[in-house]
Amino acid sequence: MSNKRPSAPRFRGGRRGMMLVLSSPSGAGKTTLSKRLINLHPDVVLSVSATTRAARPGEIDGEDYFFISKDEFETRIAGDGYYEHAKVFDHYYGTPVGPVEDALSDGRDVVFDIDWQGAQQLAKRAPRDVVRIFILPPSMKLLEDRLRKRGQDSEDVINSRMARAEAEISHWEEYDYVIVNEDFSGALEELEEILRAERLRRTRRPWLRRFVKDLMSERG
Image (cartoon, rainbow, N blue to C red):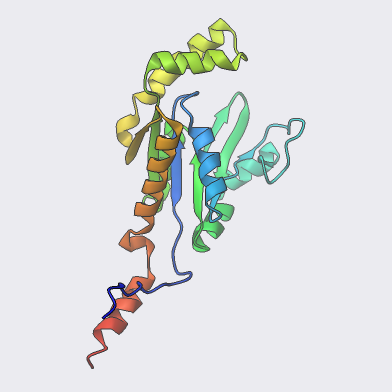
């Protein structure tokens, strides 16, 4: 008799994707983790925001942002066309519903690199689809060191970023999962574990209803 275990039934399609919301203070590593996760998993995509600001050199419409006019943005707001949106320094930023819904319906997971305010809006708008993950630095000193090593910011900007980091971290309990990014490999492993576990939720596998119905009917 073979000791080989029978393989589990495999199903293609039929899974609704999820919104993986990653938030963290600047310098804690969420952007690097997001990019690495997407590189490792072809069925995970990055949410592309819309904005009213002008494209910067090298930015591509539809890849970096959807660049649209202020009038068009406000028309879409009135039409409930955004999962979340905000106005920053006289420019609008927001997550269009259409492209995200298309990805979710196609069984792809969508990563959002947004702050706690955007996370709140998403969770309120689509509570069944959203998984919120907060990335913490191992210490505030290390976070400050990371910001300084970038060599891009003045002392005043660094102090401002640290103050914002404390405000951001104060919302950590609003999230479903928290990862302490002390070691990148370990943090990435935890992020992938969350992805795998959330994909197994009953509510994300609608094919189970039919499968169980067929299973129960086997005995006639």
